[in-house]
Amino acid sequence: MRATVLSLVSYVATGYLELLELDQERAVAERTLSSRQATLDLARRRFGRGLISELDVRQFEAQVAVPAARLARSSSCVRRRSTRSTCCSAKVRWRSRAAARWRRPPAA
Image 1 (tube, rainbow, N blue to C red):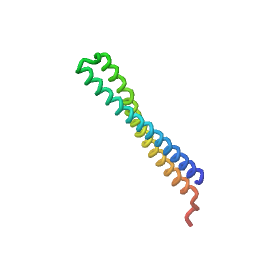
Image 2 (image 1 turned 60 degrees about the vertical axis):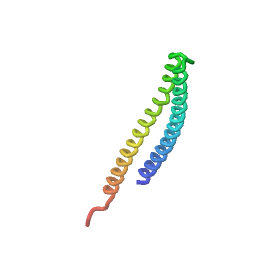
Image 3 (image 1 turned 120 degrees about the vertical axis):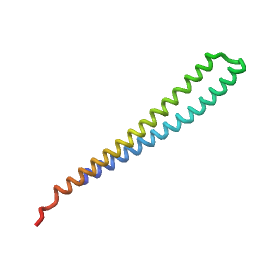
Image 4 (image 1 turned 180 degrees about the horizontal axis):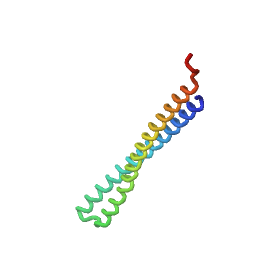
């Protein structure tokens, strides 16, 4: 029983740290996306005034796609990690209850 509890605590702590890391990655991707979106907006205005070429605008559009993809992947990882944690903790609870029933003395 103690090993099961320690295993669960270890799993939860690891999951928590992984979620913190994913949150930080998402925050960086959000800031990067915001910055690149602002740069793209500026490039579009400059293109509208004839100061830069359409190729320049397309390059800025491509730069916006990278952090947008990172955000999508980060959100997917968080959802997958949360789901896996829920499934694992349910399995550990089931195993703990099954082990407790196994150790019960027979009814007199």
